[in-house]
Image (tube, rainbow, N blue to C red; front, top):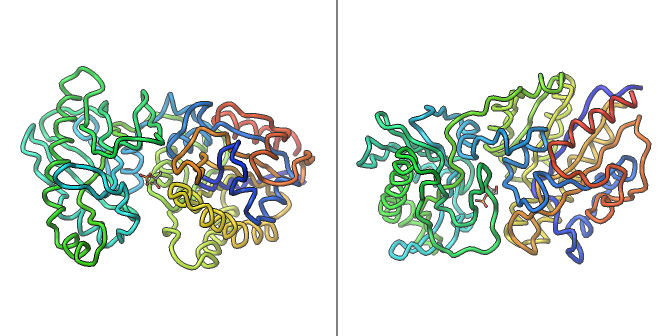
Length: 427
Ligand SMILES: O=C(O)[C@@H](CO)OP(=O)(O)O
């Protein structure tokens, strides 16, 4: 039987450090994922490259087969597209944003995510208060759209003056390295001034407008009724907006269906992966945020994936689950998120998958609870199909997959073409 379909499953932040004494994957009870590793071929993959602790967006672009150093448009643009916003190239710069908690006087960062306690409704209220904000210079103004939880998109705009995305982040947890943004483990807990990264009027203007935005929004949000109520209830106020990963233009790339000559669907929960699916030309199905009973959350994802496999050749499914507890240093919750995905998505998928279907499972990056941020550790990769002879790997863990037949894949963008070739070889 030849392989006609591929389910490409990515668990966000699933991996830990290769040298962690006991990784979450080793502790998790995951018979489904281990079955794939045992009956498939495995390896380890640096999703962008050795030494790069990638953000999800550049990592996902890479494991879809594109070199992010060449096509990366900046997470701001990606999240804007994911949130349904259009960007006027040259006159607008989009940032990924976080509602955060600061000391309004010292700008000291108390919590980069308002303690993950902001409801989407509250975030929408706060966004509305600063959407359309007049920045008082260069005919500048801001567009603000809340997305999920603490996340938002901010677009700095001008109707008369040209702007540039070559500016730094005010969010100290990520720094720009060339086109990419790198997660940092330790940082000074203060909002950073946005600076021009090129010596042009456009970049300097954009940096100045971003800093005006930061100042004005702290003033407005700190006294917003939503935050007054939150403070009365002893909750952290979402009284600041952190900016990162500026972008201004959409990349010109070969769309996924053309690149692989296959019908390609992306199923994703977060604006960033939804944006990537749209920008890179896949049919994109936005999933509701993974909130509620895991058995319901993942059975919906399973049904939609099986439905999509009837129509598309490759169905890429991105599940956020393990990443957040990784950021929060909560290994127990990260283990449970992996076990829930295994129990309510992977195992039933394995029971239902038809014999002409392969399954590829990996992660976009490591988010080890021992570090609480993305790291540059390689992530496990496993692919199983009726036509592939298993290697000696016995389970899906970092150390086990290191011994697998796929070896160490140095850059994520090499992986998918390699897997498709492997599947075609055996058809
Ligand atoms: O959006 C998120 O889930 C994370 C990582 O992508 O970002 P942050 O660390 O700002 O929460």
